[in-house]
Image (cartoon, rainbow, N blue to C red; front, side):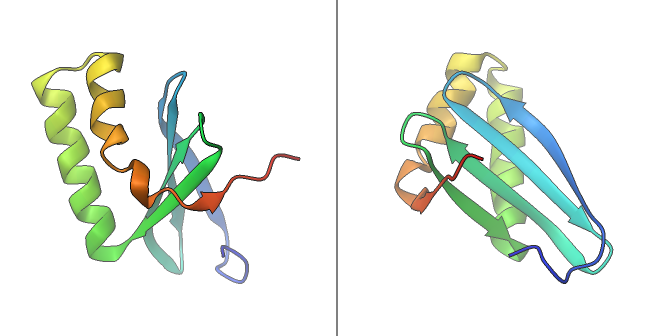
Length: 89
């Protein structure tokens, strides 16, 4: 998915026992986010407008209650979108 996009940077913007959120930045691509549900070993990618709405919602959730429990509960709402199997090397 990220091949041929030029240089890409990956930042971990959230990491808990249950979820991880990555931000991908590249010179030839727009912001993209990946949500990984560690319990199910599945993930979801968000790009363009969907990525912007996801991050806006996540910022709101953090502003409401910055606890791991609250953020994990928020991310759990995206669980049904996490359909891509995560492959570990």
